[in-house]
Amino acid sequence: MSTLTKTLAQLRDASRTLALLDSEVMDRALKSLATALRKNSNAILKANAEDLAKMDQKDPKFDRLKLTEERIGAIAKDVSTVASLPSPLHRTLDERKRPNGLHITKVSVPIGVIGIIYEARPNVTVDAFALCFKSGNACALKGGSDAQASNEALARIIHDVLQSEGIDEHALALLPPDRSVTEELLHANGLVDVIIPRGSQSLIDFVRENATVPVIETGAGIVHTYVDKSADLKKATDIVLNAKTRRPSVCNALDTLIIHRDRLGDLPSIAAPLAEKGVSIFADPDAYRALKGKYDSALLREAKPEHFGTEFLSLKMSVKTVSSLEEALEHIATYGSKHSEAIVSEDQQSIDTFLKSVDAAAVYANASTSFSDGAQFGMGGEIGISTQKLHVRGPMGLTELTSYKWIVRGDGQVRP
Image (tube, rainbow, N blue to C red; front, side):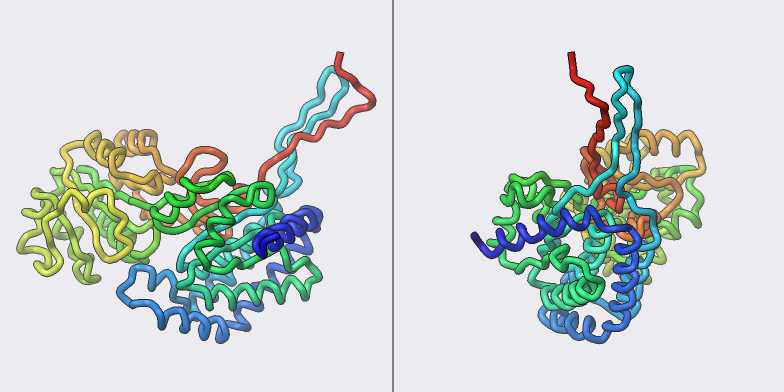
């Protein structure tokens, strides 16, 4: 038996005990974890500094990897929020009494063992554990080598809390960062119930193409915001700035601004705050002419085909000019990743058409795509944002980490 097989078998055993824990016990452990994270912030930051020292600050992953006192506080707050949410387990989803006297209920249950593969995002270590734990699932976390010291520090804190609360510490396993471990995890049928990749498109593609364990994709975010001809200028300016620059390295950040041709005269005003943040713009011919001489020339370039359908994960974006809502919808359908898409408009018919037509996990009207986040949706955090349509879609919180089973109660009935 390999070391990984032994670890996963321990997770499988732990998952059975988690399904029987009282919600009060789970909530107390999560509250203790939130306290421990704040108390041990110096140790976490020291470990994180080791990881940061090995990464180029210009790497788009640097901001995702970086932890601060504020970010640790936010992670702890999310854990507390998860603790305060209702348990997703043992809920009656459906109930019926058959003519033959059978009483049938459909009840929510844990998935079991969840494997999560992610890159340089140490916050995922805590978010994933908290959500899996509260939903009764054991989790095998496979983080990237870039964040190994940070992940190990966080995992130690989690294990200490579990031990202090008398809970099986095998509810969480932080796996080695070796690529060989990933490949073995992807084929751990019978020990792992589902794999969730969270990271770059190349990581997601690798997992989908190689796994024999079922996969839930948390896809890359190629995000658009369409500024309609009826858009309010201030709303458009504020939304575009927030969506692009709040945290450019995350999956809900804006990649392509689509603007109606009738509003090209307003494009320099919409773009002006972006220049102050150092955003490089790759503009199509019409947008380029509208911005030339009115946007920092060092930041303005003519767009090439590859600048559309690209997840930049940095202070870069493209601009596409369209002549109609239908053309905007066509562009999104061609280049989008089904993650998050937005329209800025004062025309209700255009808004309704956009919301109904766009095929994405989250669709916005007059709001920033930065809200595509489990915590912002009131879920207390997220495992990721699913861009597929089977089982779950959008931010994956507690409910999305459960399955269900049918419970049938009888009194000696047999089928004729």
